[in-house]
Image 1 (cartoon, one colour):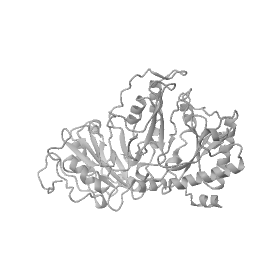
Image 2 (tube, rainbow, N blue to C red; image 1 turned 90 degrees about the horizontal axis):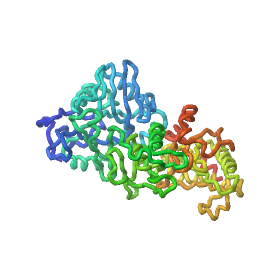
Image 3 (cartoon, rainbow, N blue to C red; image 1 turned 90 degrees about the vertical axis):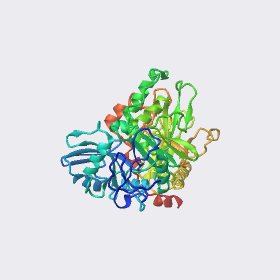
Image 4 (spheres, rainbow, N blue to C red; image 1 turned 30 degrees about the vertical axis):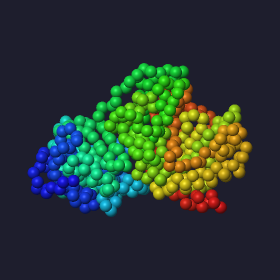
Length: 504
């Protein structure tokens, strides 16, 4: 990368003050204009792709709020950032940014941030601001990015260290990407300087060799074959499915973000051939992220546009990894999948086994969440604190499964092969990095359009129908009971004591 003095002639952009302290990038990344020969069309602002939680930070008079992309209120969780926003010299504002936890090099450490969020307090987190959408009584979204960033820099002048502007990276795009890769950043973001808020975000994001990072906040993707019926006996068409996923997006997207996703697609409806989409499809839009995991360019869904685009490809069912990109070796939860056998009393036995699992977990003092699979079984999930391994989580499940084998050998098995189960219910405890589980609030490809739905333990009775919650009924349930999955995103349980007890 060509080095320039900060006093060199600027092409179009006034330099922004370097980020303070650990936020500084390598010294060679000076605040100079974008070079001629940049492969992007037009003049662009290039910044790091900060690895953290995307947030909207707002202030109206003395009321400061920090909202997550899924609408969770993180005002108290990021208290230091909230206090810093409260002393900025403006009566009101709306800021688009990323909350990060930084390591000693100034590189975003998502695992550290997740650990802090799980504890309910992220005192060392920093808000790195990308954009200013509103300032006092002025809506800035139609103004060019160049002007918005100047206003943001002025607003942050002299601000506490917990809030900073994202840093401008100078030079030809390919050279900038090569320079940030050794620093641990997952890529860079490039936006048009002359674009309004939505238009600027239609720019590019280019990744390091480990991750391709593409995002758009542009209008939702167009719907094709909207009236094509995919659930033939229910008359449910693609338009209905898109409408369902649009409705539950604030609930399902938090379980998909930063998690490799596998989508089951039924182009000609649930009675026809389906396949599992592991790889990013050809000609996918720029707002569908991709990550190389185990040699596969896997799908990542981080926003409504990406979710609806996959649904428009007849993606009906969504399965997710048990861990996230920043810590793929560390699952968010342990898992026990109750897969019933072929007996006529299969549901009653599934309920009996589920309640036995719950009793064991209570004795081990471990919280759990239960959800319908959307088919015939139940999923029991044990949220765990960051730092656990898949082996530890599988050991927990194996210990519980063997307890059940001793208690009810005529009803349960750990044999995966169906011809060896002899009609017994499978207690599936196997858990490893590449294994996926159907995501909460995902549809299933069965008559009635059932949904894998989180339920309360007091609902786990024989009266509960295994496919009680469907595309047509889930909204009324959510209105009555709300979202029951919050614990999956902020697990705090340690397994050491429980594993020690199971070894006795």
